[in-house]
Image 1: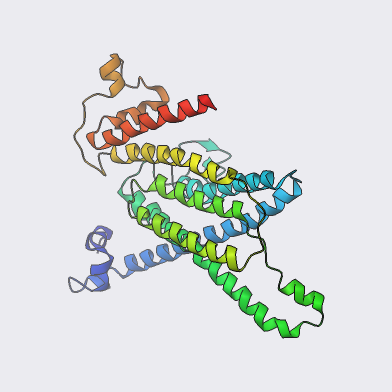
Image 2: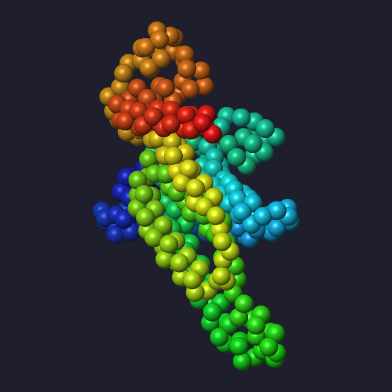
Length: 325
């Protein structure tokens, strides 16, 4: 049986053997799908593990740099943690499967990035990369539960090991609570917001994970901070203000991705202008936008027009804010 027939029937009908005989004819295709799903799940779990390991390493790097104040240390941890997690979860996951049409020390970039199968966000991209991103988003939303389980396991170990301590010093060491890394938590939450905002135009289900994830972060961090951590120092408002000022940038990226997604006629068919905006309003030849020509070309589709208007407004706002700063 052809692969197209199995794809057309879908996993649910193949498992239910509807129509009769389709399960036996699609066993090879089904085995390939299961193997691909297991590999995608393994890669998503590895991303979360790497993020946790990177968080611990970034704290050590910040201490090695000998910051002059606690605020400076917190800002460094948040900046490095946010960038590392964003590159790990969002950028690498996306560009590994993209064909960037460059050759640098091999196919793509060193044979690792930019030598994928896709040059645009087509249906197959959502089946391969989109499913992996949804799974990663789901695991990212469950990260607070991992923190809670680790805290409860540490509390249980402390209770069981208390009677085995041979000196008061060891008992005090056992019951000394760890520090609550506020900067690392801010970086993780900001990374989750950015990743979900950027990829949600093509996969709106990701937006369902965001409120659940932020609610879990709030309740879990509240419990860990008040019950299972040392008394924190007097933090300033710099981390919170930095997080709030970064939200418009995430919205700008969201609108940019929305224009690119909704301007793809094969995925979202829509009415469109026969010419791009720069051709209509400036009487220029095709490609008049330079490097922005592909983006301007997609803005002519009516489905991408609302996102393009919001993108323009956010561009003006961010530019004005940058000039005022």
